[in-house]
Each structure stands twice: as structure tokens, then as C-alpha cells.
Length: 158
Ligand SMILES: [Zn+2]
Image (tube, rainbow, N blue to C red; front, side):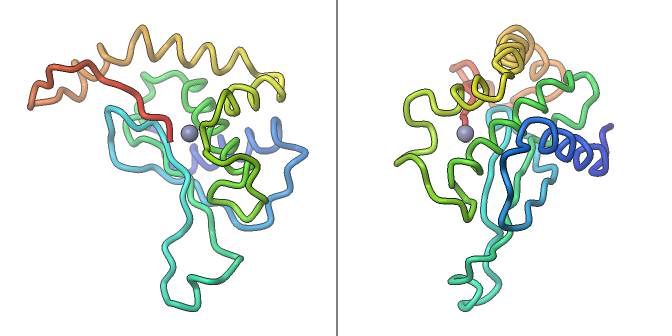
């Protein structure tokens, strides 16, 4: 199983390789989240501990990665692409102190454009291909839904 240390190193690597232009004005923490069939990752602000914290500009940003991705059966590039996806939100000013570039986080093709801009369009394509071809099977084997939903899984991009 992949450790938190592994995830932090992966994040460092991606940040240093693909986001060299981006100087983060606040602290970014990455962590494993709960296991999820649909949500691959998300980016959020650390919950304020007090009212004064609530108005602070130097909040911490937290990137949460699906706990199922601790499993080494999931290719590394799948997780890489999720980290890039969340960092794209960060660069666009969502849950980060940077100026917000768009009205909504997934307006148009802003995330795809970010992958292309950074020369890693292939990474996103590879990830989506793997998810399409393997994710349902993986869930059926490793994390079956006991409530047996009638609808197929749908990925929610957060
Ligand atoms: Zn998203």
C-alpha cells in the first residue's frame, strides 16, 4: 500500500516538474481521503478553527486523494493526473489565495486546457482511458457496492 510519504513525494515531483511557473502563496497539504467509487480527488480550504481564522488570507489548502488509490494496482499516472487536476484548480484560484480566473471550476475545458498548456495532454488521456477500461471492474472486485446501484459509476470531477 502506498504511504502518505509516497503521496507527498509524488506531489513534490508534480509540483516541481509541471508547475514551475506557479509560486504558491500558502501552504498546500496533500493527504489520503476515504475510499470512494466516484470522487477521485478534491481540493479544499482547511476548515477555520476560529472566527478570526475564517477571515485570514493565509489559510492552508488541502488536496485529498481517493483512499482507494493507495492500492498499487492503480497505475501511478492515474494519481498523477488527479494531482494535476487539483493543482489546476489551485492555479485557477479555487480554494487557493490566487486570483480566481473563471466563474466556475470546470467552465468550458479549463482543466483540459491546463494539461495541454503544460504539455501533459497525454497524461490526462491515459488516465481517462484507464478509468474507462478498468475502474468498474476494479470496484466490483475490490470495493463492491453492497447496495447494488442500478446506475453505473459516474466520476465526479471536483
Ligand atoms: Zn475538478
